[in-house]
Length: 250
Length: 300
Ligand SMILES: Nc1ncnc2c1ncn2[C@@H]1O[C@H](COP(=O)(O)OP(=O)(O)OP(=O)(O)O)[C@@H](O)[C@H]1O
Ligand SMILES: [Mg+2]
Image (cartoon, rainbow over all chains, first blue to last red; front, side):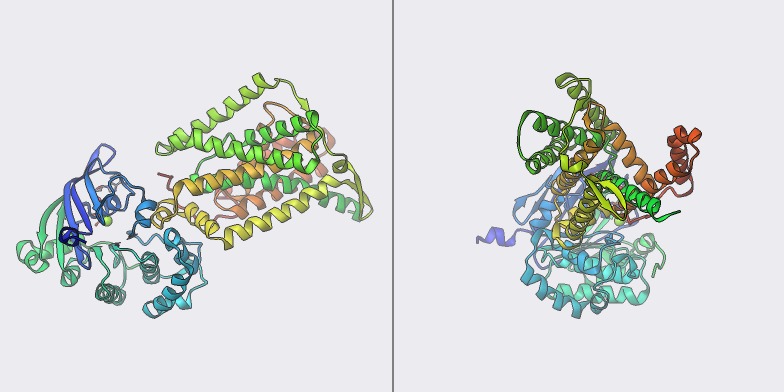
């Protein structure tokens, strides 16, 4: 492998424009994620954080701009193709399949990249990471509490062994205890070398654990760089308060 | 009520209900995944019926083969209609898809009228279908028992597929949340094609037993099973497969009770009473008897 490809980011988004009908939501977003990095995206409600993740994952088609993933131009790819190519999105609001059991949710998570042997090994691992999933293995996903559903959503993303794991507000609407658990989990995943792109309303905590960060505002990148510098440059409390939303649903 | 009348009633409800359950199931398989009410579903049945007519009249193939080819042609028309007509419009609004399904339905009806005949064709029925069977002291044609047995077997097979195969789990997931299923790597085209194939398969089975009862195939014959499917689905619930099955049997139960209890002078109003019951369901229990889990989101 040449030096150039080794240093190339695993994900590179360049000048991305995304619209909902006639209304532009992203006005030329550029960002990159390198292998093994934990990158956070912060910004107030409506800044375009979810939109950029959905565009990267192939759910939304960009109007212009490009997305490169693992050295390939994947602009315009379908979500199922991107998943097969190593991308996983843990969507905002968890989006568990409510009538499917925990087991079925997990099996579906591995759909595009299913390997029976690895699935069994992963389960062992997951049961230590998420003990609750073992207890509830044969229960319908819709019966889990909000925090448990979030665990399931993350496990469902991990089970495909993604090269890039994207998480959209995993702590949304959880009690403080659960939020701690989620952040511990993210730290654990980071220490395992998993590449993570994290969108968080909880900017303060997201910045604490991030290697690099982006601040979005009105569909543009307002700031990009080291999280500790970001704290000085922008008023974190305003970002934090602006990002505050959702009740405790547990 | 004496035992004989009861058994006769039960056989009527079960055989009619089985047919109606299969009809409704074929509609709901496509609706579950695509959120599309497929008006062309009736024509999937008509195609099967015409193939039974052609093979029955012009060939001397054995019956099992005739049935198999009939079913496969309904599968083919289901699969191809999705590929040719629905897929290009999938990115558009749900209304566009609905209009497309109307168009497919009307185009197929016209093709039957122009290409075959506007008048009805007599479909040969195997003799054993009408063979009388003695059961609990009453006689009933074998086809009534066959449809019950075949429905039970099909429901078991479909249950196993939906519950225990990876594809079945993916189909259930996709019908609850299509976008998220795609994010897990479930290919949109695959699950939609499979839904149409299963829908076509059920239409093919329905064609066999529908023509066995009416003895004919005609261009507009698809409309009445389509209507039956709608009613069963309104009763049972649009959003779950078991709901469709329950709806089919409940519909047959209500229809048979009406036939039995309405005075002869009112019997011609049976359909009117039936529709009144449907309207009552729409008003009082719009989600049907079985609700199911679903998202009000369309396929993108
Ligand atoms: N489905 C949609 N249709 C139309 N506009 C949308 C849609 N989803 C989002 N938008 C708009 O796009 C912009 C960006 O939304 P987005 O969901 O990406 O924000 P976000 O940063 O994720 O916010 P939040 O913190 O509330 O999740 C907003 O102005 C929003 O109103
Ligand atoms: Mg969001």
